Structure formats: structure tokens, C-alpha cells
Image (cartoon, rainbow, N blue to C red; front, side):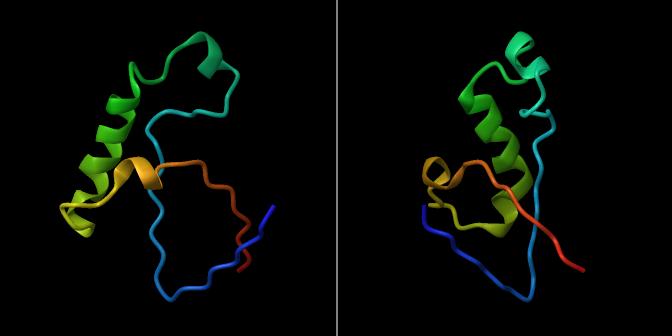
Length: 68
């Protein structure tokens, strides 16, 4: 596995409205479809990204550690 570290001056974090890591995600579908999930982030982030942004290529799971 390749480890990549990124340091930036400004970072933005957008969280999904529904928790996807919880065990309830297996019993209750937090989203009816991938398109619904993707639309949530389009609604939140479209103002910051170009019109031709590749949503399918950039949506994924993000784990982090924050040091302050």
C-alpha cells in the first residue's frame, strides 16, 4: 500500500449526512442509490469545483489523523 501525506494551507472537509461506518448501515440503507449519495456532495461542493469535475473518480473513503 502506498502512503501519501499531503500538507496544504487550506483544507475543506465535507461529511456525508448519514453515517456509513456504523453497523446500522447494513440494516438501514442510508442512501437509496449511489446517485443520491453523489448528489449530496454535488450540492455541497459544486460551487468550489469546475463543471467537468469527475465525481465518480474522486468519491471514496477518507481516513485521517489530525495533529494540532
